[in-house]
Amino acid sequence: MLITDTNLGSPDDFYEALIDAHRDLTNEQSQELNAALILLLANHLGDIAVLKEALQHARASVTRGG
Image 1 (tube, helix red, strand yellow):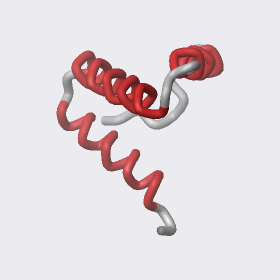
Image 2 (cartoon, rainbow, N blue to C red):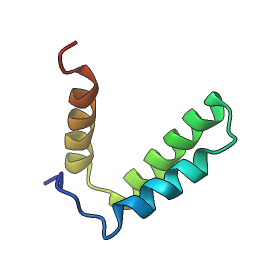
Image 3 (tube, one colour):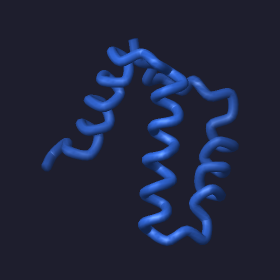
């Protein structure tokens, strides 16, 4: 089951690291970084059912009301 409650010990530190990773990249490079990060984390997780649930949640978060 996908964990949707905050599960990071320090979410602000992760957010800062994510923003830093994108700093000085072009929009295209930033999109490529996001894709690479998604694939790395998906591989690390390795559970297709959880990954599909995450995709559904992520898609719903950008299509609500539209």
